[in-house]
Structures are given as C-alpha cells and as structure tokens.
Amino acid sequence: MSQVAVRRIPRGRAGDRAVWWVYTLVAVFAALVAGIFLSVLFNSVASTWFGGWFPDGYTLKWYRFAVQEFSLGQVLWVTVEVGLAVTAVSLALGLPAAYVLARRTFRGKALVLVTLVLPMMVPPITYGIPLAAMLYQARLGGSLAGVIIVNIVPALPFVVLIMTPFFEQIDPNLERAARTLGAPIGTVFARVLLPLALPGVLAAGLLILVRTIALFELTFLVSGARSQTLVVALYYAAFAAGIRPSQSIDAMAVVYMLTSLALLLAALRFINPVNMVIRVKR
Amino acid sequence: MRAEPSNRSADVAPPGVRRRQRLQWIGLLPILPALLIVLGLFIYPFAYGLILSVHPQGALAKAGMLANYAAFFGDPRERLSIWNTLRLAVPVTLIDLAIALPLAYQLRRPIPGQRFVTGLLVVPMTLGTVLIAEGMIEFFGPAGWFNKTLIALHLTAMPVQLVHNYTGVFISLLIADFPAVFLVLVGYASGIDPNLERAARVLGAGWWQRLSRITLPLLAPGIAAAAALSFVATFSVFPSAVLVGQPAGETRVIALAAWQAAYERYDYSQASAIAIVMAAIELVFVALVLVMRSRAYRGPTIGGRA
Image 1: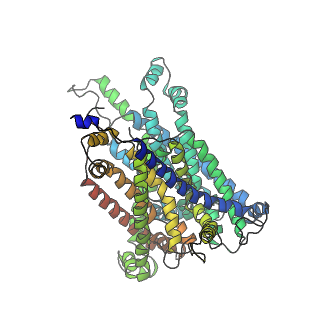
Image 2: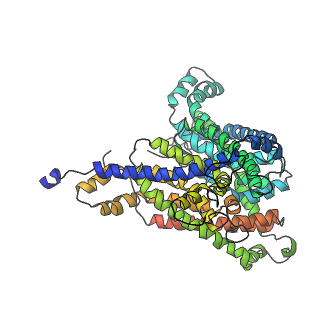
C-alpha cells in the first residue's frame, strides 16, 4: 500500500514531450497546406515564374484577365445567389424541425432524426447522379433553380444537426413564461427564441454558406454554362489547363479561397470546429 | 410519428386530454417540411436510381433487368475502377487513422492553443479538394517548392513526379481527409474520463497495458466512426482523381466511371447502376466496421463516480 502512495506519477517531462510532438505534426501538416495555398497566391501575381524560388516579377493583370476570360463577375453572382438561397431555405425549413426535435419526444423520433441527418453521411456523388437524372427529367437540369435544389439536400441536415443541441440548451421556462403572459406562438418564436438562438443561427448560416460555396460534386452534376458556382468554374479551368495561363486560373482560385476563408473565420467565432464534423456529447 | 400519450393512467381520456393529444400531434408538424425535402430529394432519388438502373437503355434495352450491372462487371476496364478506388481509399483511411490517433489521444486533455490547432485543420477541409488539387499542381509540380526543397537538401537530383499520377491523388486525399478523421477522434477522445487511465496507472498497469486495455477499447467507437467516414469520403473521390491524377489510367476511379456513363454517353441508366454499386461497396465497408466495432468494448467512458 505504502509503495503505491510513495510512487509519484510521472507526468511532467513525458507529457510535455508528447505535447511538443503534437505541435510538430500539426506544424508539418500546416506547412504542407500553407505551401499549397501560397504557391497558388504567388503564382496568381507572378508576371512570369521560371525556375526561381519566387516569381520573376509581380503583376495584378491575371485578375483582370480572369474576370474577362472566365466571366468571373457572373460566376461570383451565381455563387452568391446560390449560397444565399440555399442558406435561407435550409434555415427556414431546418430551424422549426430542430426546435421540435430539441423539445419533444415522440414515437419514431430516432427514425426521423436518422432520416434527417442521413444525407450528410452519404457522399454527394452517390446520390447526386440519380438526383441529377431526376432533375433533368423535370427540366430543371442546368438551371439556377436546379443548382439551388440539389445544394439544399446536404445543407438542411446540417442545420438540424447544429441547431438541435442549441435549442436544447435554451431554458424552456422562458417560453412558458412568455406563453403564460399571453404571447402568441409567433411572438414567442420571434421575440424569445430567435434572439437566444441567434449565435447558433448565425454560425449555422455562415457554415452552410461556406459549405455550399465549397461543395463541388452536386453543383458540378446539375449546373449548366450559366449556373456554375465558383468552385465548378475553377474545376473546369483547371481541367482545361494549358489553354489559358496558369496564373489566371490561380487568380480565380485566390478569389475563391479568400471568399471561403473570410466566411469560415466569421463562422469559427461562433462555433467550436469539432462540432462541424460530429456532435460531441459531454 | 404520433405523439406519446401524456396521460397513461387514464383509461378513458377525458375530452381535455384528447384535445391536448391532438395539439401535441399538431406540434410535430414543423418537422414535416424538412422531412419531405429529405424524402423527396434524397430517399426518392435512391429509389429512382435503383429503378432506372434495372431498366437499361440503348443497346442493352432488351438484355434484361441486370444488364447494366452485368455490363459493368463484365467489362475489365469498368471493373478495374473499383480496384483503382480501393487502392486509394483503403491506404489513405488507414494512414490518416494512424497519424490522427496518437494526435487525438494527446489532445484528449486540452493543451494550450487547442482551439487554434483544430481551427487550422478545418481550413483545408472547408476549402475542398478542387482548390487543394489546383494548389498541388503548383506546389508538388516539377518546378514547385516541394521539389525545390528536396533538391536543395540533396535528397534527389531530379524532380520527383508527384502529380498527374497515383501519388498525386493519394497525397491530395491524405490532406483533404485528415482533418475530418482527426476531429472525429478528438471528439471521442475528449469524452473519455482521464481518471480511468490514472486508476489503471495507480494499480500498476504499464503504458502498453493502459493503451491496449483501457484507452483503445474506449476509443473503439470513435475509431469506427472515423474509419467509416473516411472510407466513404475517399471512396467517392472525383475532382482530384481528374486534376492531379491520371484519369484515363491508374486513377480512373468509380465515381469517374459513373460520371462518364452519365455525361459522356448520356446513359443515366448505366450511370445509376454504377452509383448503386458504389453505394453498395460503401455500405459493405461501413457494415464491416460496425461488425468489428460490435466485438469491441461497449459501455460507459466515464468512471463509476463522476
């Protein structure tokens, strides 16, 4: 017994070394990712780049070139339209569902929850092809409406997944108090629930915007020439590399990168990144 | 989807209770729009694809219900796409797990800068494979920084061919897939009570015993979830297989085979059949993981007294 009590548990040195090891691995990963992104950034402002570690000269002309050559203005506009429409519809449909799932228990709840979250678990290309076939059949293929419709499929489950725990943590007594004081359901929702859930709603909205802008497969499968989002236009440009200067493709990539990063940083202010992949129960 | 009766003790529900029950059922209606969207745009397309796939078009129209599947498995080039995809998805999943597991294990207790570290990992995940692939063409290309560094360090005399082949797709998946695997594992690892391991240590268990008898069994559900998620994501690889791979040869993956059927041959029926094969292989893998997981420990991850 005394032996156990005397033996000190070595935590300090070994623990510290392990933590440094974590930082090192993360640093290697970060260096690779930074190298990849900075290559794109430097190339996009390079007048020419032969052989050296850095470009031979710098210019912004490739951005002008990209705007004209890839009709970047129109592509950006489509991206904004699709992003906002998908976010609005997913929030409008997902918030009420998340609220009910947070507050009520009913028979078959587990089944409903699994059904609602399922599209997040299945890779888009698997259901994207029959879905695209269906939309082309309905003459929606290639249209902006078609692109918006397919992007709602993975976005809606995301709202449910993020917002259900958010509503769960709001004290139901606040709603009861409001109801007791005579507020109609609409007022309770608008004046009590929504302000309390606002950080979650903002985070969910921003994350959907980021994910919709980044989601390639579904948009790729249903978009036409005039309904491409930025990431699909980038794919086509990279696919046809050699036709246009690589700097102009990278200029488009930088525009895409900065748009997504700005939205992502805004979203990360509201939410723990771990919750983006999985709901952690504590 | 009917509401639980709130008053089980009453044999005959008085009118007030019945009215409340009806109201409870109405209270569930807000789920309906979301549910209808998922049923109509996700479940139904699967059924539609299944039906489409057993109604072959064109030359195969009279060859029977399973002609599309027979054509896919009968053609060596098409069949090879399954192998091409497995050859990427399985090693990438295993390597990402092997790297992420010790990392997540260390992060089960918060360390300084944890939020920053996890935030950093989310960035490549969010930007997606198309951008990673485009950047890789520059960074890992023959004149890119990576090869320049290798040459400067005298690790190689000639630039190494890292893109437009199997290696390119492999690296792109490794990078794109790692954050999700890591974040899933951290989520599970941080739910394990550190006291369990301390208790084992106090009782005299060595580090290997603690790892193999305490930590790994407790992490098993996390490992299973991460493995399933990773495999399913990498098995459906598409853009990077084209951009940094060799889409006509060694990285002609199954998603590409499906896409070519739909958009180059306009045979949605054949394409749906390939998509169904793809989904089936993913399902088999997930089922395999779940079976393995069910043989592992099941139970609480916290000590007897919280």
